[in-house]
Image 1 (cartoon, helix red, strand yellow):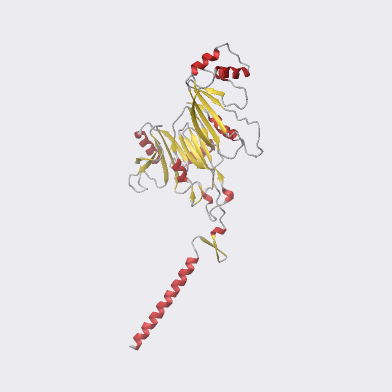
Image 2: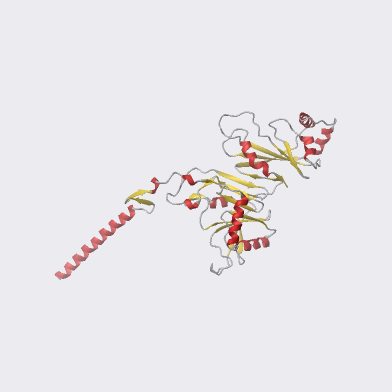
Length: 384
């Protein structure tokens, strides 16, 4: 009996020692958190090494030729630099929109579209066409109906891929979700195991597809990824009479009734040295009466001096002009700081642009917003 009691006491003491050691070891592990770094044997919180994340401006990209719009960040950090510390300030890079008629890149490379696309096509050829498209390379395809949409999905992702259509918060914008054939990746003809996006517009009859691989591509660090935010903002817009591409500017569209008087037109062209017979502008105004002007106001989004808005106006070509000289002969303006200078035309529309002349500076050092917008909008202007 005495031996039995001794065994019990020894067992209890042994258990107490185990519990004490376990609690002590657990406390030490708790103090050494996974998010901390150890420097010379001393635990130092990572926050001492991590720079404060910057406030990132977001802009809206809108392309009326392609009929699409999305928001994108002004800057990001290439994900190859997402190591401890998880934000490297000197690696933050401006984003660039590179595009032609059927492909668009969101890129951190300050390059031309042709150079980026040429490199991709060369890489694709080396891998016999089996390599995945680069991240944020948007392929834009006209699709007449959902049968053509299904063909596009197969072309992009695999011969046995099918899909389902899911509505988004945006009118005429659908997410297309791929449905695989259920086979393992090594045997499937729809081997999709990465983040992809397909957007579809029945009205515009267009589909847009891109991927972001298996990792976030645009962001500041692993906890601040922008990919899904950009994708969620993507939507289709109506294709309009005016084709334009805009960066760093908002677009306000308005309509107004044609409001030129014969006296205004006569005075305008006279300042440019052009004269017409009496009654000429009365007849001209009669041809345009009740016409609706379409006005596009492109407003710079950054800090700037006035004027900050570049204005483009469309007027139906009711006079049947066939040359810019004919158009200018009736609507030319030689005064400075005007809103309607004849620029181009087609058989349907007359296109006017505004001046960005302000006549003064406010000593702020900021750019004139209208000039900044005009640099990228004016060269892109076309008429449908």
